[in-house]
Length: 275
Image (cartoon, rainbow, N blue to C red; front, side, top):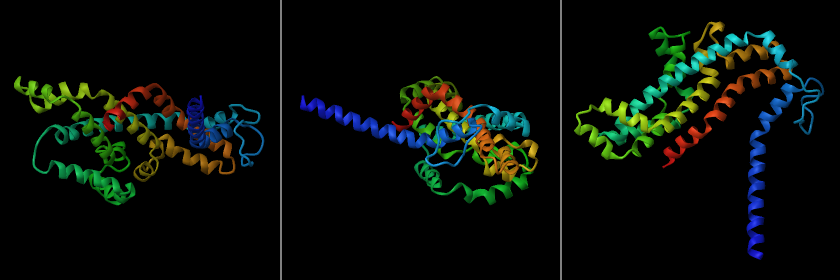
């Protein structure tokens, strides 16, 4: 009886701790959503209000009327699709020799790639911008996505997934005369769908929320993605936090919807990488 009470008390404390961490993690989003839906009352009251006062969609309507949200949204979709497809192609090709082919220096190359994770993204801004300028890719979507196509995290994620494929399948394909490229396309990729889905979701979030690099590369405001277009919202309504919160919620909704529908594939892909 005493043992059962201890177990129940332990579970209660554990769930209470997890609920507290979840609430702290969700608090910024809940506060932003409440502010976007609120049409009256103070914004920066203490303690913060999570239940909107006079809830309504007036802030969202005003944002849509003030900004070309449709154009920014379409730009974000094009940029995200372009970047995700390119990232999946480059990372899946780069991970194959690092996982399933023997050549001198393979482990050193992998270690060097993982070592670049220690460098901040901003460290390559100047070099990347000068390179894009020489290639004539400034103010293009290719210039926005090109530096991010060879994602180190993506290469490592897919390498771990490739290592889980039985060697007998690859040997059988080689005995049948298949080339390495054919083995990659017909055997390895179909068996790595969960990891590809996980990388696709991670890449989608990164490209959709990209702000600094698109702002540096793109010169034409008509090509701005939604995250950069919201910069104009802050300039126009710096005194109206509700409109800024409404624009932020509009930018987050597509990513949240995608994660809800694809979370099972995302978790399966991450489990394969951890193994």
